[in-house]
Image (cartoon, rainbow, N blue to C red; front, side, top):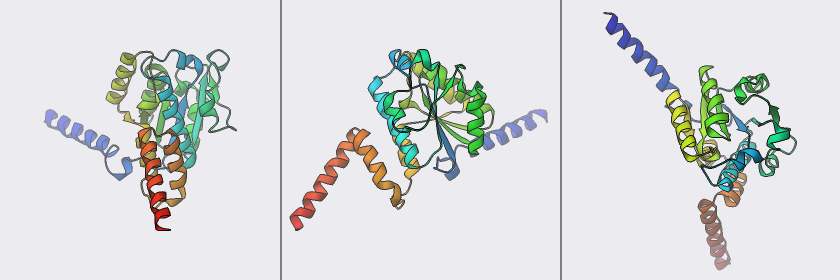
Length: 233
């Protein structure tokens, strides 16, 4: 009897967990999410060994610009700014009027000011990107999960001291319940419908400037469309 109750209880718990990760409500929208950009600073970039630093910077700028375009509340934060360096210019330029919240805590979620900011937004989906994955991303991501937040980590806007440390950190977070996504996924999930025409020009500009092969293909498509219209004239 006790064994049967345990099976039922576990099944109920699994169903509850699955409900947060499947269905339309599991997706990110501009209205249900916040973005934390953690420690994209010179010291952290200097110790980055898992990825090409320029790729991480480019992807971080993509998500920063996308969040701004879709009005997703975004918090910039640094650790020991005087020694670790200011937030890198490409990210700071997206939010020129926001002074990054500087911390002493390695784990941003242990800083009351960070948690209070998230609570004030009243949203349960927390998107995180930062350096390094194994420390300054994994710690707040895992802690935020325990407090009832759904946590999404943008894997290609994070990097670790080594590839091994980044990969194992991603494994650890996924096992804890974090949902890994990429910068490209964020752009598509927020746009969702091309009938949302007010954000299409801004998103197209982001992809054209930072989208790599996608941006190149888009520029080519624009060229062909313009050529076709000129030929008709």
